[in-house]
Length: 333
Image (cartoon, rainbow, N blue to C red; front, side):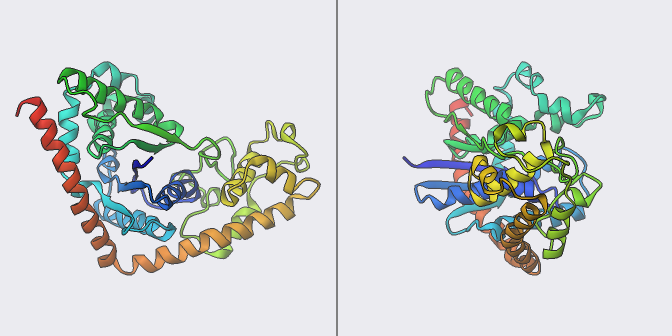
């Protein structure tokens, strides 16, 4: 059965291994199935819910697009575009926002986490961006959405909005209620310096992450210096409990190799940390360094990247505009 896939990545700059293993790698895998219709978006409207430097925002949009392309996304097989070039997303968000309920938004835990203690100073956009996310998805009749655990609640909101709209305007199945595609294993890649914290570009230490633009030496050195514990490598599942740094490194290895954690445990049973780290560094260099090279090459040709986004946005606008017009007709405009 064919699936309509929609997902996006914020252009926050300095994409890292966590972004690749948690999202982009999944995008590429989904594209490989010819039954899937895939739409991938650089969600730059979401990015401005917090203040952005205009110069860096444009650079980051291109860099995220370059990471998509360098990782294997093909504009001939998937629609690739940036959100701000398709005005239907913002218009759809307003129309759907008039169906969504305040109580639903008040339950969104991500706003509470991102806004922090002084939520009165947070932007309105940060509060209502889950409705824009719903618009992103519903305008393309997406049947499946790859999401991390932290976005699962927002997808539930999308489903609630779709169901309420269909009920309010007596149009069953007009807005498709999408299903989540949740990556259960290794969806959260943690810091190389602290296995209890998510890998993040905002971490002041560059040693905490593998950037998608790192060269061979940087990748090897970061893995060698990655935090570990003093215990031996695990013999079985029980030996890995309460060892967050080891779980993270084994998870990275398993994800890159497309194998389960048990196989990784078995592969390195009885061996030492240095041998494991050498192996991990080798496979990361083999996988990430070509992506790094290609990103740098693509970024030298801004016109090529901009043309990919322009072409993709024209395709996306055709689909999204038709759905917005149909929504407006249902409403009575």
